[in-house]
Length: 300
Length: 274
Image 1 (cartoon, rainbow over the protein chains, first blue to last red):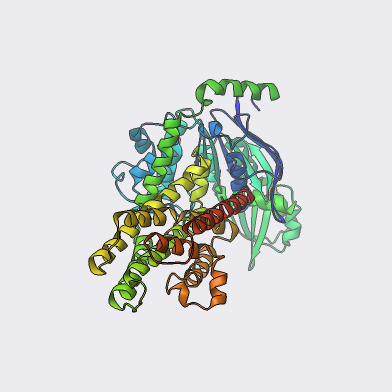
Image 2 (cartoon, rainbow over the protein chains, first blue to last red):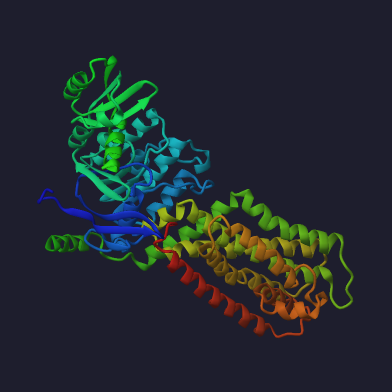
């Protein structure tokens, strides 16, 4: 942790249980001023729970959640943040302009309407009712609403969930424009590509626990590798024992191996099985590699 | 670490540690009411049943098929009872179903995460209920005066409007209680299951005098009974009871439901639903 950086929010040994379900287990992390932190993990990993604790929408079963060194529920702290959450339905009969007006009204010195519209990319649809908007436009309105108070810390909970690639990339541009103003962001996502595109630091979270924490380069380094496909007599268990193998699966007579050190693994494969055939080596996408990391942690 | 966090806090105070002025707070409350009203005035699924049903019942049972009664004109009587029926529906639907769906869909969480004071959210819905009730009562009174030859003194029209506008308040609190006590999917079912039978038993469809005596005794424990009686009382229908008894009962129910709604809200804070 950079000793110079100011901490704007912090989870300290935070645990959250919903009944018998453990959503978050003794999670500790800081959000540093001026940085973009991504919480990366599959569905149900506990990302949204962490956000809810930091927003004061939910209180930890044990441990603490602090915002600007104080209680997240204090109005004076809430005036310094903005939150884009996962919403099933927004009142559909109000116009975009009216939603913005209502949220601007909650802050003593909000951003001008024009700035909110520009940052959200809402030019030309201000007078449309929310119900008339496309999925991408709806998300942009939720983003704009979160920006109304010119927040020092912005929460983005799965902002591009369910988007196609094009809309997602357009939305990233919007987020980057805001981040370039030097603002602090906590992003949750289950796309490594998204975390890589936007964040300075990635915390990988799975089943309520932190499984990796580092810069995007470090995280990608941990998960990058090659996909090896071949026909071999070796069993998946035998292959798993080879150093440098992240995961093994078999479909029909084809074996698929994700390897962090492909050359080393290939040498060992040829050594153990001279009859190995139909060899194919390709690079893996970030998502496959990320899944391999999660699966490895689960197996461990 | 602790020392630095404290420094952070000290730095904060001059920036935004001050509370908004009274005027700024008032504007937040008024804006909630304005947009709540706009939202529902543009929503046919809300205004058609909440205005349409009481008006349709009044047209049908008071104007088209009036039953003869020796002691009082049916058109006047049903103006009081269908008025009460209508405003109870507006309160239960806007608070009970409105809050429970906005909570289930995550919209309430967005508002709770903002600096909006949570009472402003509920104030907006109460204010909407009161204004919308005034609209319904105006329409019913116009129907009664124009087509049903209802003749009342100016003070009686005024009192009827006042009673029905604010008579929805205990039912607003009941709506919040239901929204937080039962799951979001069952709130509409619970509201409907309570609303129609209690309106019937309270004599809002057929005069309470026509119900068997054991049901009438039971009805005294139902808030709609007291609103119906109070509305009849102020328009000069003999109800054999004192208006203050009904005002007291409605105030008592309002306090009881508000306490229960507050307990249910606090219990819910921090659970799965925002």
